[in-house]
Amino acid sequence: MRYIDLEKPNIRIVKNFINKSDIDKILETKNFSEDLWGLDFKVNYPKEENVDKILWPSIKQWDGMCINFTHEEFYGRYPLDRDFYKDIENKTKLVTEDKFGVKVKTEQYLVNRWRVGREQAPHLDYFISNEGHHDYDMLAENNISKTYLESFEGRFQTKHFSSLIYLNNDYEGGELWFPQYNNFSIKPEPGMLVTFKGDENTLHGVKAVISGTRYTVSIFWTDLNKRNNML
Image 1 (cartoon, rainbow, N blue to C red):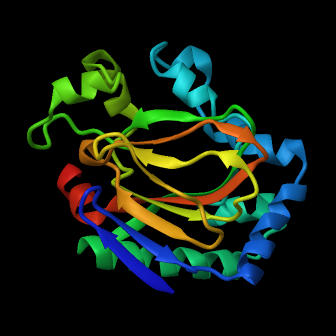
Image 2: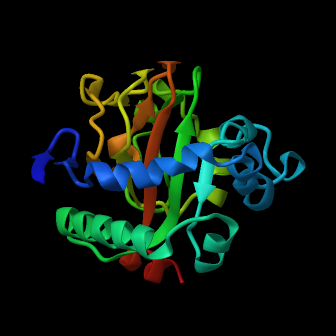
Image 3: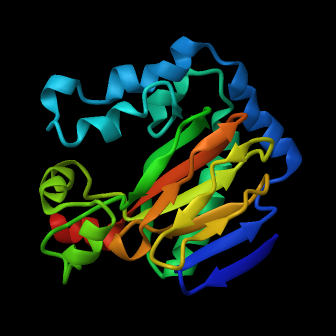
């Protein structure tokens, strides 16, 4: 493994974080049925009628994209090796805690499938309005309005850190990029880990997948100190 710490954006990249054998095992999910790929959205995501209209487009896009095994009981939905995935989760947690000097717990743990046309505009992963100063002008320049944030805050307050593991690179597009830092982007390498904060100082997006299918593992983390302060 090779660690690369950057300041702008404030991220850690770990090359060869997992090996080819690990990657191949995770990519067995490619053979899962469409019912399994759609299960998480069907069971765990809110229904359109219960979501503010401004939020629905960003929620709807996850339909058919995720294998979710965040909680112990979720593992029973899929033919997955629990201990294997727990080991990857724990190793990723240690990297995140070391990089940012925090203690975290898993907020969400997914395998993601990004098909042709799928992209994400620059965004944050959590927002707490009374947490320090917010640069609303900068956010508006990135098409994140105060109206959107008012709705977003109600559902997204606990994804304080994000970790991404690339599983393949046989696709075009799909680069992770950071608009605040001269559109800095990361070229995917199978087995590479990227971990970063989910706040407004690390807005991030995913460029459109042009061909092929992009597979990743994504783990979101809750900062235990922030969580305890919210209780």
